[in-house]
Length: 389
Image (cartoon, rainbow, N blue to C red; front, side):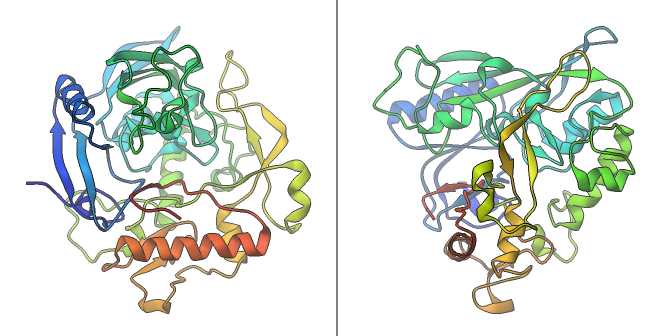
């Protein structure tokens, strides 16, 4: 049975797929991707579906879902730390929970992020001052251009704020000198040229977290930014913060009254990164956060990334709210099928009967309102398939 994309995404909207494959082994994953490319049909690789918005008409290609799970500990010692590998289909938060229990430092602030391991390096997922790039060592991929397995080290992945070489390869960007660059089948969108097969992590060992890099989290923990805290406390606090913003999913098997604030795709827009010389266009009370390098500043101990003095990050949620879009805003009031979350203005939510066109209309209104008020154009973090802003 070919499912609707509404059944495969956390926003619970989107039409049917023309074809659907569940891959239980790596060979089956590669075979499904290659078959789609051979047939010249669009390919959509789905993990947890937590960052997707698919058209009401559906997807006229092959949807491939990696369902492989498992966490393999390659090594775990006080000298080298823990080297851990997981397949792309592994649930992300299960890996984080295991890391906290085992004393693997560096992903505790990424607790509660929905989705799978395979999607994490593509987006360089991050939250509360921590990013995945600080713990990745290798990413094994299937190179759709060269039809072979290709492994990227952390230095080759081009990590940045919510981006990577993997993500940019959706649109044809690759490494210099790659054979076949400029292939007429590129861009590869909506899936990258490099489809993630597995990810290897390098963790330091300890009971204290990496340095806390986010003010709100530091205050809740009773520490200063840059200080460390017990990892279990960090995880519990982050889960509480995310839950209070509607940024957690219902647990498997949940059969209670739905919390429609959780029917979202996470942060719909990225936080704008602005050159310091453009800050004069923002109100003085607009939030300003340092922009740090994607990898730690030092390798001799846990550290935050180096601050880039030419850039400043501001809050998309703050801009949205101060442009006149309050929590719970809908184009038709409280009866709107798609509304901003009642807990967090950065999430577009399905109130139970929304269609993709309703979510897009809301997102356009918010984007245009922020641009008109502040001169800042918000960029979607959610991947749009068959629709556009």
